[in-house]
Length: 372
Image 1 (cartoon, one colour):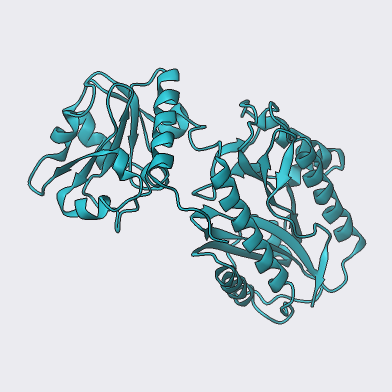
Image 2 (cartoon, one colour; image 1 turned 30 degrees about the vertical axis):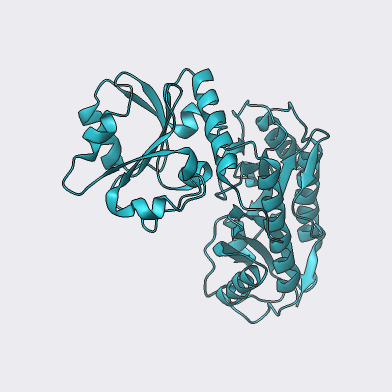
C-alpha cells in the first residue's frame, strides 16, 4: 500500500490547529525544532541535525515563519509543507538568536519541542530573557495525539506489515539459534514488508523474557523456552510496535496459566476502549485482571503508549493520566507478567479509538503459538 502524500494544505491545517490549541492553553505560540514535531508540521527532515539552529515559529498573531541556516535553505524549500511558511535565513557569523529574538514576542510564553538542544534554549534565554518556555509534552501533550484518517491508514499499513513479519518469523527455527540470529531474521522480514526503518527487535527467551526491554543477545534458545518477540519501526513514516509471545515446544500448565492471564488482561483493556474513558482507566482494567489473579507485582510497566511519527508519544495509558480518549487516538495495549529468572509474557496490539470503541491495527492471533 502506498498512501497519498501529505501536501501543503495538510500541513497548513496542522499548523492552524496547533496555533488554536496553543491559544486555548494560554500560550503565545509554539517553537518547533527538527525531529518528529517539525516533520509533522512541515514534512521537513534535515539531512543532519547539527549545532546550526533551525526553528519553526507558530504564533497566534502572525503567519508561520521558520529560521533556517542559509546553507540549508535550498533543501528546506523542497519540503512539502514549507509553502505555508515564510523562511528567514541566517549565515555563519551571524548571531542566530538575535535574529530569532526579532521574530518572537519578547514577553511571550512558548511551548518548545522536547527535542530542542539545550544550547538553543539557553541562547534564547540569553537574548530574549523576557520570554518563558515550556516543554511541548507538558504544555500541549495532546498536540499530535489525535490522528487524522490519513495518519490512521498509515499506522494500519505499518501494523499489517508487522503482522506479516510475525507470520514469517514463527515459521523459522528457534531452538539451537541465538536471540540475535532470530532478531536479525525478524528485522529482515520487517524490511521485506515495507519498513524503511527498524527501531527494535526484542527477542527475550527463557529468563531473559522477564526483562521487558531485554536487548537480544547471544543466549541460545532452547526447547521449553517462552520467547517474547517485541518489534517495530517505521513504515510510510509511521510507527509499528507489536508483541507476541511464543513457546518452543510444549508449554507447562503454569506457562499456559500465565499466558492466558495476560491474554485476558489485554482483551479486557481493549474492550474498555471508547471515547470519553480516561487513559488511566484502560491501565486500571488490565491491571485489575492481573492483580486479581495474584500476579500484580509482576506487571511492572504501564499498559500502553501512543504511537505515530515515533513509536512512543502521548497519550500514555498509565495511572495519573486523566485525559479522555478521543476518536483518532492511537496507542498500544500491552500488559505483561514477568517472573524474574524464569520467563515473561507480553501481548501487544496497536489500537485506534473510533466513535464505537476500539479497533485493532494488529490482527495476528493471540493464542500461544508453538514454534520449533
